[in-house]
Amino acid sequence: MRPGHPPSGNDAGQLRARAEERVRAREEAASLRTENEADALRLLHELQVHQVELELQNSELQRTRDEVEAALERYTDLYDFAPVGYFTLARDGGIYSANLAGADLVGVPRARLLGRRFGTFLPLAERPGFDAFLTRTLADTQRESCEVTLEPAGGGRRVVRIEATASPSGKECRAAVLDVTALKAAEAQVRRVSEGLERTVAERTAELEAANAELEAFVQSVSHDLRAPVRTISGFSRILAEDFGKQLPPVAADHLRRIHDGAHRMGALIDDLLRLSRIGKVELEITTVDLAGPCREILDELAAGSPDRRVETVVAASIPVHGDAGLLRVMLRNLLENAWKFTAAETAARIEVSSRLGADGQRETDFSDNGAGFDMTLAGKLFVPFQRLHTAEEFAGTGIGLAIVDRIVRRHGGSINAESVEGAGAVFSVRLPAPREEGP
Image 1 (cartoon, helix red, strand yellow):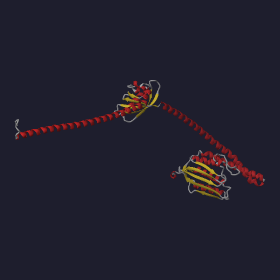
Image 2: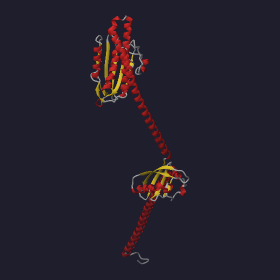
Image 3: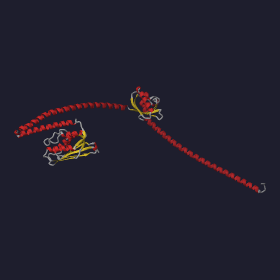
Image 4: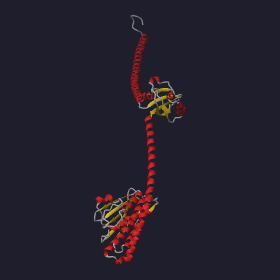
């Protein structure tokens, strides 16, 4: 295109093309600037996110470090101020670390203790054993223990117990050292006291056996010496009554009867004394015994001996217990003879033997009657030899029968107690072991 002349068709097309090209260039430049700005914004966002992540990580690391430091401080306090000595030992017994109690045990400040061998605080005779203990500990993952004598730097001796385990690396062991000096002294004292008690028991046992032997000899002697004159009195009084009874005046005949009765009671008393003295010496032959059968037999014998009496007797169908049949029969005879005797004044006498199994596996058997009974304030005297709750004129007897019953029951590991209302009868409750198959 020339100046002063309007553009030709070709010139106009070129101008338009150049204009469009320039517009496109501007648009591309603007688009590029927009893309660069977006990239920059995205990059800035990423940087900000990473910054926040780093800040969070830093906070978490700081918190974790604080917790670790607090835990370490707590562990250090626990380690340092524990009442038990703690040591970390090398294979040769060298001390890597120790707490305050450990340093106090060996009498050396902790700062000067590191590097020293633990064995130097032991007597020479015990060092080889301690070295062997270290070797065992480091060769195994199990805890090992031993007792050694410490000789602290300040003097004296202490007995200590060492419990040790190997570290995970196996290059060192961690040992807890406890002072057991006082415990050992106490154990020694207990042993001395125990030995003294054993000697005392042995001496007392020997004395008791000697006393029992003397008592047995005395009882036998007294029995023999008493029986002879009693037999003489009884025999001659019987002969006198048979040969001259009809010639005696009533008063003399009554005196003679009293002499004969007294001799008979003396003989019974001697027999009861012998039984009482021998109960503790009889070797028990424990079997399962049904008391019901012997009870019926004894009651039948008593009824046969008193045909003029009418006594209602009731005995449980079965009374199984665990005990010595001979001694238990003696017990039954004494209890049933007592019931028979004390119901003598009753026109409608009743004697009952009932039984039940207790929750503790013992069988409780009640011997009840509706006889004279006794004053419960005097119940403490029932099982004491020669203690009578009724006069001899009221009821005959030696005053030993219930003492025999009590000893027999206690020899079987049982118990006996009595309940009564005076004038309304009595109940004697005997507890004896039941057979095992009968237990609850």
